[in-house]
Amino acid sequence: MARADSLILGAYLLLLLALGARGARRRLPGLSDYVLASRSLTLPAFVATLVPTFYGGVLGIGEFTWQNGLSNWLVMAFPYYLFAGIYALLLAHRVRLKPGLTIPDHLEGAYGKPVAIWAAFLVFLLASPADELLMTGALLSHLSGLGLGAAMALLGCLAFAILLRGGLRSDVAANLAQFAMMFLGFALILPFAFKEIGGPASLAQKLPAGHLSWTGTIGPARLIGWWLIAVWTLVDPAFHQRCAAARDGRTARLGVALSILFWAAFDLMTTAAGLYARAALPDLADPLFAFPALADRLLPPLARGIFLTGLCSSMLAALQATTLIAAVSLGKDGAGRWSGAGEERLELWSKAGLALSLAAAFLMAKLIPSVVELWYSVGSAVIPGLLLPLLGAYFPALRLSAAWALSASVAAWAASSSWVLWGLALGRPPLGLEPMFPGLALSAAIYLIGKRHAPSAPLA
Image 1 (cartoon, rainbow, N blue to C red):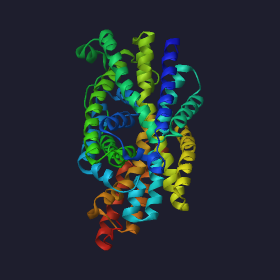
Image 2 (cartoon, rainbow, N blue to C red):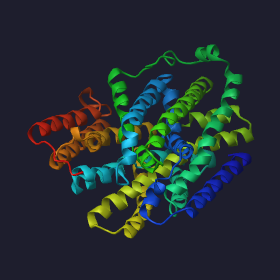
Image 3 (cartoon, rainbow, N blue to C red):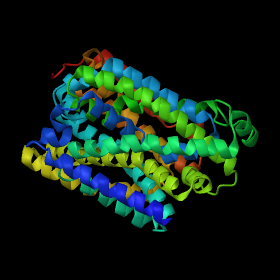
Image 4 (tube, helix red, strand yellow):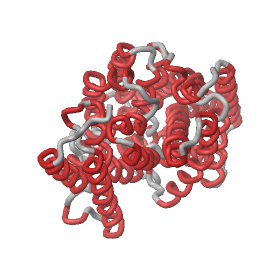
């Protein structure tokens, strides 16, 4: 790593720590402030925190685009815009107006304590910062020469330090810089790529056959599986936390809509950079490093340092957000709800959960050392268990009795998780079915039976 790169990235990480400390100084007493910043996010702050937080997989985007080409947009971009738009129209204002701080809080209001405790476990899995820790650690290892484990541990300590005192306020304060830097970095590299490779016609000549196809080499079943993964948006804990933290329902709804526009602009930049990386580096050994390798190939030291800093930004934002959510799920929503602890202890346990969540993420990243597979495996296993119960919490007509809702959630999670593990052992999806299908089908079947035989009796 060049001296200029090191200085720029090091100064940036210190800036994030300073911004986190500044956010902590604005803290108000109480768990609501630690988790939701006392529901005070304005529209600019909402967009500046949601955009980088939900776009944490930038290295994975580079990996996917290098391998599969333009189909990245059809798989990793458009379906998320679609479901984010549905979220903005149907859920954002409901999340903001619903009492309670977290997804398990809302589920407790609809179904009772056992469902909420089970949901805390699922949210903990879904919010695991394993993929962000793997990406940021892999990048730091690549740049610095540190071992992957040491790099992940260092960045885990950074996230812990940013979040410990201020919670969401510290997270959002750091996000303001991360939002700006993620766009600046890619705006910087694309002109260099255009100069080196040429425009669209020259780029097309240097790409493999099918790389400019919308579907590439992805089969229909896998494509549908990826689209189902985009349902993640409807149950995403970061979406929920930011909408619940918005100043009002209008801010939440408009903030999600504006964020879609920023994601679309950023997707254009990252997809173009991924295609240029494939054209410039056709023999790249590890596609996960497509973007850093492209920067090494094209950029002078100062520009490379700025780009690499921007590359880190959205990944660090997502690492912070998922670590905080996983910690709150473990400390407040899980252990705290189980024990009936008071608010002061819930905050203390949530802070302890920061370290435990990062440790669990470290182990998961070691077990599945692929960003794309982490996304696919975790999403496929957890989403079927959360989707219908959570929709029932916001739409009473879809709600079951507590016993049926819990049965549907546990069965769906067990089916999809088993399918994921079976597929990992076989090296391919069992029976040609992606793991989301059996989980969602079982959940839907139990819901239909439950609605027919045991209509719900809403608790709230």
